[in-house]
Image (cartoon, rainbow, N blue to C red; front, side, top):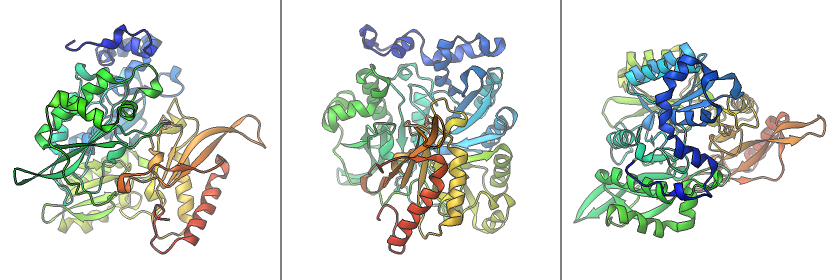
Length: 518
Ligand code: SF4
């Protein structure tokens, strides 16, 4: 190893850190063929957690030996071969389930260890990988799903994200970080990448240097959700596009070498940033990069929360991108194959995933738009969804997730459909549901965030599924995390309580007034 793991001499590090010193997470790739041949029972229990570095989690109950796999999709951009390959994996091995995540990745369920080598082979044939999609390592790099076609981007970030992804992929210098590590790079002027909730974000900026206007980035550090959420803070630097990798490597090196390793709940970069503050962090950063220019101007217009519904002109004249709703991010493999067929027939075969768990079909010539929209699949996967199902987000929940306290995905879908029936409203209300405090469904930035808990029921014996309600989250204007309302609601009463709450909002608000402005 090229760098010194100084924490190896510290007796107070978390036991999992000791395990990570004995076996690097990426080493699991060397063992998977063997375990696939010998079967699930041949995998020592203490190695289960290391499968995360290969993008694999054991579903609940762990003993049954089914895996969930997350596949990286940098910036959410998939070409035709990649879409077809992913659909094929879902169809052949994943019981037909294809989930789009809140970080533009794709998730499968129900995979068996015997099937993993073939899945890896299929992924690598089309340039995809699940390496680092989970674990204490650089996760999928989030970006502008419209990169390269966006009339609203300061610059095309496609090659920057690709370079960063290739650099950090399977890189043993950065495979033992203190905790999960989330990067985002976007020059979209509507903050489509949710910059403030990532550990590190490169956001669009301009600066006059030597009399010339240069397009580049500002740097935000230390965001993250979970039970102790923080919004990232902006460092006083301007970064040219060609400097992004050097700066990303420097920040990651600081996290690796100075990040905390004692408590799993205190190890993320946000805690180091909260303790140091932006000035001290910058001082350390320039020790690695050398001097960097001070901040420039931020041309960001507003926050679109990753929603792109409808038909929109691209920066390329005569071509359009169309944003569609995928209810709570879940598609069937057959639907993905149908979308792949349509994207090839009318466009260039690409499909792009959004942080809002929805998708975009790009590169549709003006003359093909109407015909494309007649395709039968767009009765469910619509471009103008109603205000609740169209703006609902859900994490995986108890169906597959070992950390979940409650069921989420199907419940969120049913509640959104119920609200669309019951409450007619003139603005979208973003509702995010999560099954535990880890917040994969990003409930802190929702208009209404629903967090699953267990509570004692007056009527039933034992503990029942329930929810806390948090309101008022946004990333508009620098961002604000939502706040918890008093009390908790038993899951069975949640639809009615939300309906009454939304009636109140509807009655009191002005026409066109959004939930955030209320
Ligand atoms: Fe699982 Fe909790 Fe993440 Fe939901 S938020 S997927 S329950 S860890």
